[in-house]
Length: 203
Image (cartoon, rainbow, N blue to C red; front, side, top):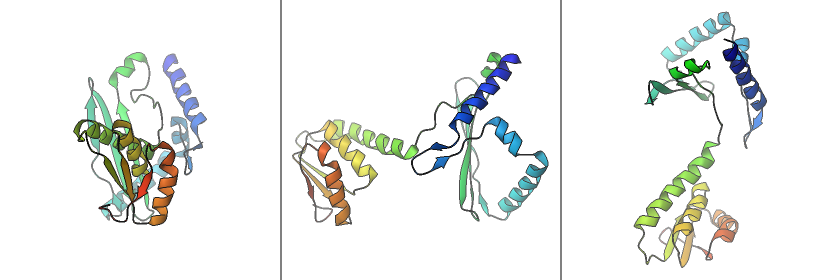
């Protein structure tokens, strides 16, 4: 019990240091187990749950069935999302259950290792997979690359394409000429050839 208590205190200390972390577009608040118990008296939570169940029955809450992934030996990863329509608030509870942790006198739910911005990961991962496909499927003599769009995915895809294949020309099209101009200026330093504006999606 002493080791478990120390772990719980370390857990709370680690999360308390993360409160108020800036995540680009705003501040993300972190609440430790101690915070949750302190801010959630049972009598108040019973009333909140009653209200939530009424809202769910009335269709004011979109709460799909939880998704569960099993991994390793009797280990579980669960995700439980919900959207409260009236307040336009969406959230999800993510939890792991690792029974083997009890043998080490630590909580069975484990401990988070990192909070990572998903948009940037998505942009890089998606483009990297496209890079794999281009590396193995692109015609060796392909010489023209057409970029359709000028958003975040276009930026990372341009980086991926030029990393795996040499193009003699790169055309950029977008519905807004000003965005095309901004894209060409921003991405010019990493492009091996000039970025040419395209008048239509067909080039």
